[in-house]
Amino acid sequence: MNRSLDHTTSLRIAIQKSGRLTDKTIDLLHGIGIEFDNYKRNLMVKTRNFDVELLLLRDDDIPEYVQDGVCDLGFVGANEVFEKNTQVTVLRGLNYGNCRLAVASPKDSTLLNPSDFEGKKIATSYPYLTKRFFEKLGVTIEMVEISGAVEITPQLHVADAISDLVSTGGTLKANGLVERFTILESETKLIQTQQALSEGKQQLIQKFLQRIDGYQTAKKSRYILMNAPLDSVETIKTLLPSMKSPTIMPLAETEMVAIHSVIPFDQFWDVMEQLQDAGASDIVMLPIESMIA
Ligand code: PRT
Ligand code: ZN
Image 1 (cartoon, rainbow, N blue to C red):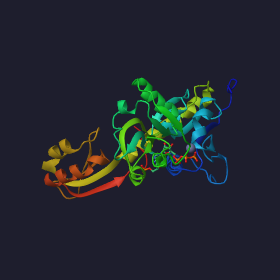
Image 2 (image 1 turned 120 degrees about the vertical axis):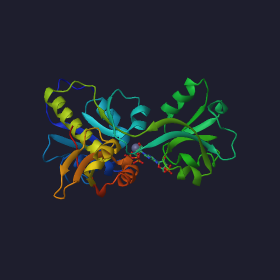
Image 3 (image 1 turned 90 degrees about the vertical axis):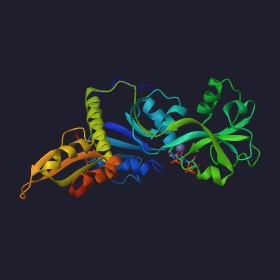
Image 4 (image 1 turned 180 degrees about the vertical axis):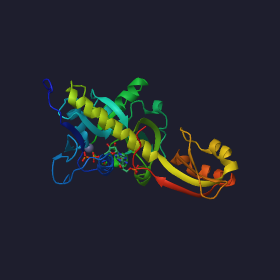
């Protein structure tokens, strides 16, 4: 299904219609200023303010639609991209929909390490990745391909073990299974077709990526404001883990200044305690909508 030379400018983006990735993908698109509605009822949605249309699909179909150029971009789990062995370009990892494809066996099983699985039956919905993993290690397994409820197959004696997606591990535990090793770490990826795109589309993709990067950085950062005595400014500057130097403004009260900076969210609590010890007060932390460097 190769497409002829592309002169269009409207970007077509594939997203999951209804599933684990849908809400976060919609939030991200809204977060980067793309406006649309009625995505629950339609398969194709035009956006109001960006030259983008969304195609709502089953996640399994997204890698192939992007590979074939039916869609220019797609949001889909790495597990689907690599299981389908599609030729697409991964533009960004988006750090949601995180999970892993792992091998699990019953809790009293002697199947622990990959080499224990020689000649054993493994049930999975991910035959390509599972087979390739064991092949690379020179271990021959018997594959039982199942499309759902893989975790009950050992109890039914259909398989000795399973290879399935895991996030919290609750499903494995509920079925008396123990995770033994990981085949693939997965997260949602933004993928692009490798078919030739018009100049207009390429520019639009650059703009789209810049917005995504700004949104992602903003999500991981916080704006921090505080008041501090003038003589503690130097110490406070060394404590702030920001990439740029902080803004320092005089206050009406002499000998005091206001300090503003952007810091990584995961360091906020540690830093805040150190700032207090250094004399900072009235510390305020604010979320940031977006950040363009
Ligand atoms: O209808 P459609 O085909 O679009 O959706 P789907 O039902 O095939 O997929 P969906 O919506 O369940 O998952 C979409 C994507 O979410 C997957 O392809 C992964 O990239 C990602 N993801 C993240 C997960 C999980 N976490 C996950 N936990 N997909 C499935 N699971 C399963 C897991 O296998 C287990 O059965 O959820 C169950 C609960 O997991 P635990 O470990 O938290 O108990
Ligand atoms: Zn699916």
